[in-house]
Amino acid sequence: MIELKQVSKTFPTLDGDFQALKDVSLTIQDGDIFGIVGMSGAGKSTLVRCINLLERPTSGQVLMDGEDLMTFSPARLRQARRSIAMIFQQFNLLMQRTCLKNICFPMEIAGVPAAEAKKRALEYLDIVGLPDKANAYPAQLSGGQKQRIAIARALASNPKVLLCDEATSALDPTTTRAILKLIQDINKRMGITAIIITHEMAVVEEICTHVAILEHGNMVETGTVEEVFSNPRSEAGRKLVFPEGAHIDQFPVASVVRVVFNGGSSYEPLIASLAIDCGVKVNILGADTRNVNGKAFGSMLLGLPEDKSEAAKAMNYLKAQRDVTVEEVPDYHG
Amino acid sequence: MDKFLEQVKAALTEPAMQQEMLTGIWETIYSTLLATVLACLLGLVLGVILVAGEKDGVRPLPGPLMKIINAVINILRSIPFLILMMMLLPVFKPLIGTTIGTKAAILPLVVAAAPFVARLVETSLREVDKGVIEAAQSMGCTPFQIIWKVILPESKPGLVAGFVTALITILGYGSMAGFIGGGGLGKIAVNYGYNRYNPGVMIVAVVLIVVLVQLFQSVGTRISVSLDHRITDRGGKKRRSKETAHKIDTDKRDPSQPML
Ligand SMILES: Nc1ncnc2c1ncn2[C@@H]1O[C@H](COP(=O)(O)OP(=O)(O)OP(=O)(O)O)[C@@H](O)[C@H]1O
Ligand SMILES: [Mg+2]
Image (cartoon, rainbow over all chains, first blue to last red; front, side, top):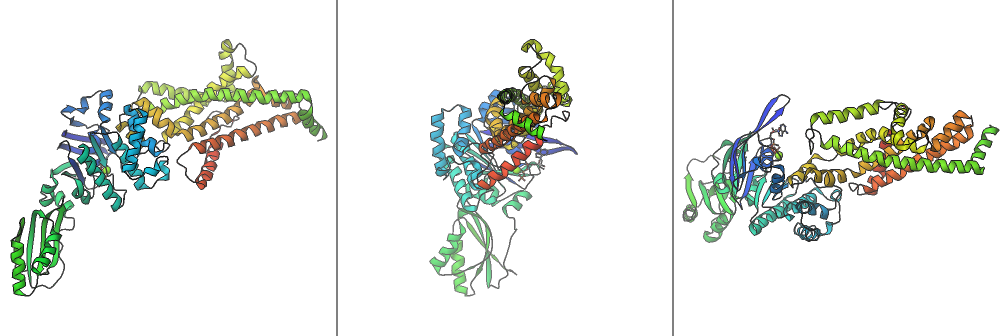
């Protein structure tokens, strides 16, 4: 378990002190995949760097299984860091070492015998899909490939905690998905705790169990992804979860209903089954929904057909759904 | 003109002259190499201390100590080379037994060149990406491991280029030492060209020095470039070779200049 207690970080700058973190408190349970989101400059990197003390908080505590890292001797801190792997946005690979040697590096530091380190490194090269790059140097790889080597390097030493600072922002959507899947997989198989910084809400939706929202160095909201996404309480949270606000198309329709999803099945199957089960086609006029771990949250505006009986049929069908509330929007003007 | 050509011919063909030239080449090479190795070792240690020991380095050292090291380096680098050598020759006399000849010049050369190498090393080490060092810290590396396994290997190409620069500079200084009793090709050039007014022999000795410098420079450049795994294609190799050669050329100290 990782606990941050009233962590503050002040940077002395030329024009006065700058407080990058203000009394941030967080609890991250073992096995969580914890997302940290926020606008650029919110303090996300600073926060995650406080967890392995690359940045020493100005005040507060960083507890790892109940022990305050801030009180550790340098030797003990090094020991603790060996179980906290970090993936950097800038990869930070050793340019004069081959990929294989890069992945071996943390194991070398931790004293894993060379033969075993090599075996594990090769395994992870395979897992990240780059088995043919063992003897290539980082300069010969694309950005996404470098990031995957960095990920293999982080994972190969069997860390208990994985810190990812924008680990996927250099990657294309397909590779991003593959990497997220990999992290999720490792999390499920080995129970690794992952802390993932991102500015992409899609990443949080995809794999996180918990999320914290940072704004100007304050932690304005935290909770399970379901909680925060279905009902963001802070302004910053709403802006991140629904960046466009409610968006509704101009469209002439007979009658309009609002369907609110409370975490049931996702909404596409519902609209599809509406068409299949009762043969009624509806127009989606606007949707403000999010899929969180396969569950739907938010609301959607549906335009029902002009035919009164079909409209009624659709209404009844919708009302019969679990985790869905339906209400008519009497004076919808588009 | 005829006389000059005859002198050149004599320098190249007369057995006694040939022997003297060969000895000169040998003395120059071995004293240069030996002094370079020692100066580079000393310079490397100093350079590492300068980078690792500063306030936000990987192993901060007491501020006053860093100030003293910096001051000593700056002072040594500010004394004109020949004067520094003259000052140092008697210092090492108890150790070497003489102030004349190739051997006597080696240690003063080392002391004169080491601060220069330290600055070259410092520059190369500072080029290592801060992020990579941070990554190593996040893995729990000790300061020594960071220096030994990260900073030094990552800056290897730059270090080698620096050592080549040192080699060339020391060869130049060593030749200048011919004026104050040093040996090798420098002594031959000074003896014949300056003391006995025999420009033909001097030119041969100077050409040999130039050839040695060019040889060291091109071999050194090649080694530095071939060690650099950041370069992956032939175009890049060519470009880096040019850059490295240029860097060595601009970094090497002109022995006629004071140590600035
Ligand atoms: N070493 C430093 N010295 C001074 N100010 C700093 C330092 N590091 C960070 N800051 C400031 O702290 C604030 C938070 O920085 P941080 O890097 O944590 O932001 P972030 O949320 O990670 O942003 P991004 O999404 O752009 O990476 C920024 O305003 C930044 O200018
Ligand atoms: Mg950041």
